[in-house]
Picture 1 (cartoon, rainbow, N blue to C red):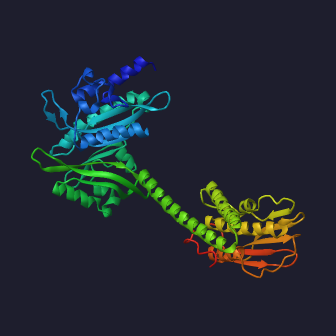
Picture 2: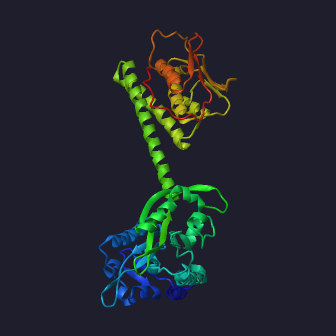
Picture 3: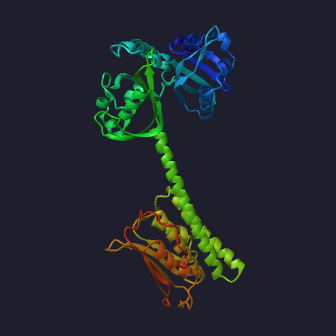
Amino acid sequence: MSLIDFERVFAALPSPYMLLDRDLRYVAANQSYLEATGRTLEDLLGQHIMEQFPNPGESGRRLEESLRKVLATGEADTLAYLPYPIANEDGTLQNRYWTAVHTPVYDAAQRVAYVLQNTVDVTEFARLRATSSPFPSLLAETSLIERTLEAEERSAEFRQLFQQAPAFFAVLSGPDHIFTFTSDSYVRLIGGREVIGQPVAEALPEVVGQGFVTLLDRVYAEGRAHAAEGARVMLATSPDGPVEEVFLDFSYNPVRDSSGQVTGIFVQGMDRTDSVRAHQRQRRLIDELNHRVKNTLAIVQSIASLTLRSVEDLATFREDFAGRISALARAHDMLSARHWESTDLETIVREELGEATGATLSISGPRRLVDAKTTVALALMLHEMSVNARRHGALSRPGGALSVSWQDRPDGALALDWQERGGPEVVVPTRTGFGTRLLRATAAGELGGTIDLRYPPEGFSATLVLPAPHPGQPEGPAPRALDG
């Protein structure tokens, strides 16, 4: 489609549209917008919107905030039922109500260059009159909406450019709250149900026990608006489907006749289910991160304290402490790669053993996944046994051999066997060092299992038993001190 065709269609659209640049200055406006605002194109081009339509109150703040939000985020935004007076030719202000949709328009570099506004004057919805039947008072409004929708359908090529408002609207008439108008977004919200002509209590029976009909009664009787943000509602959102949890921003606004008598309620709002659930997920992630940070700090504190007590010089402390922290970091890297859900047992073993230069290394066992807590504990235990094997055991000389294997036991427990051969002759230790304390404390305190440490002359061996179920166990409180 050529540029001249675009300009003609833009000018002919029956709904008001205008375009602002990044400084919120007018770039374009169609005839419907000029008629709705009582301005000429010459009045607007190059002018700041807030200078042309000043409003120092809440409505002005909301309008400018919405426009700048679109420029900053690149996401569309909707202002539903915004009270915003417009000056007449004689300078007097006329109270008007609008629904405005702000849509980002990108340049060739995919940067937000403009904001497109489509605004609908909904003033008449706020001025509904009570009649013998609630329907005649809405015929003109419904006809206008239908003509607008038909015009939009004729402009099918622009449906992707001009986004329809995500806000929902409904008009309820009389003390029984009979539906006399529902927007397309409202119909989608309630699962496509036909509700026109029905009281709320019959059309949406699932909301009765949740207090919303009682709330409508109060708004109708007292004539005071009610608004809520992120309200939890159990609603059937698909035809013949079960009720589901949704979260809505909504307001109930009384509609009055010329004498001030309340004749109905104007309902408007936004479905915030996705954003509320995203916030809940973010909150859970933050809580989980805080928990993990506390656990990690407790482990680091214990490692630092016990390493310092088990060495005699600063150089040895630095080497041992750095090695243990590296083991902890590798465990965290493995978990990060799998979104902190689980880790393959063989991956943990290979990461902590690394390359066994000059020695024979055998690793075998069925594929098993272990949870985050078990991953960290196993990484620290395997690191200690690996360091000991390199300094004093089978990995300290050429020709040594190390076998690490695991298997399921009949009772569902997982048994991991560590077997060294070909190293220096093993001597039973005369004192309990850091490594031994860590192995025993971690096996019992962190994993709820057992470890059997054996010192035959031909080579150190150990068997670690993790009770069933070993994978997927929830993380517990912060670790106890490694010396128990």
